[in-house]
Image (cartoon, rainbow, N blue to C red; front, side, top):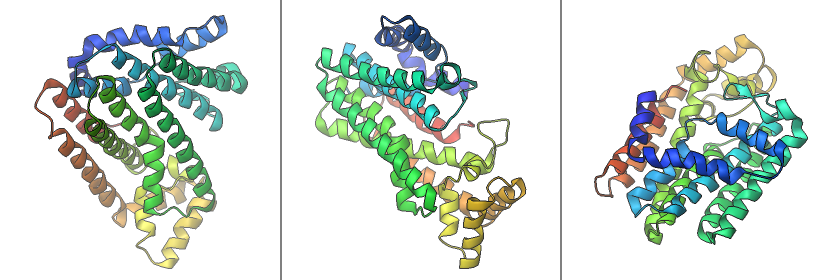
Length: 325
C-alpha cells in the first residue's frame, strides 16, 4: 500500500514537498505555546491524501499556480481543526497512534487551537481574496458539522435508514474530499462545469472511502486499522447492519437493535451480531455498493484526456477500495 501512495504522489512530488513548508508557515503565530502545538501537529501528519487530491485535480484541470498551494492549505487547516475538535467531542486520548492534543494540553487549549486554525482559513483566504475557495471550504465546514449532529441525533434512536446513512457519510466524510477536488479545479480557473464535475468526483470517492471504513468493523483484525466491532460498541449504525435490518424478520430486527442498544459491550454478543450480518448478505451488499460509487468516480475521470495526473487519481480511487486500514 505504501508503494501505491508513492506512485500517486510521483507526478506532484515537488509540489507536496514545497507544500509542507508553506503549510507550516500558514499556521505560525506569535504565541510560543501555539507554535509548539502546531509543530506537534505537523510532525504527526498522516498520508496527506487531501493535498494530493487538490494538486492532482488542479493539474488535471488547468495550469498549476500559487493559488493551488493556498487551496490545499485551507483544506488542511479545516481538516486539522475538525480532528482537534473531534478528539475533544469524543473524549479521545489518541490520534494516529500518538497522544491527541486534549490528552496533552487539556480540552480548553485543544478547543482554542481548533478555533485558531479555523480563523487562519479565513485570514489566508481573505488576505489573498480567494473568495471562491473560501466559499468551498465554508460549505464543507457547515456540512461536516451537520453530519456529525445528524449522526448523534440518530444514534440515540438507532433509527437510521439507508438514505440517512448516505446523507451522514456524504456530509461527514465525502464533503471534504469533494471540497479538495473542487478547490483544486477552482484554484486554476477551471470552468464552472468542470468544478462541479470535480466536486461530484470527490463526493463519490469520499462515500466509497467511508463505506470501506465501515467494512473494517466486520472484516479487519486488531492488527490493522480499528478492532472488529468497534462501531457496534459505539452504537454506530453502518451500511452492512442497516441493510440486514431492513430485510430480516421483526424478531431478528428486534434482537439486532437490542444487541446494539443494550449488549454492545458484550464481546460474545457483538461477535454474534457480526456473524449474523455476514450470514445475511450485509458484507456482500456493502462491497457491491462501494464498487458502484467507485465505478461512477472512475467514469468521471474517463471524460478527461489521458495524463499522469489522471492516472494518479485512478490509482487513488483504487487505493481507497483496496486499502487495509
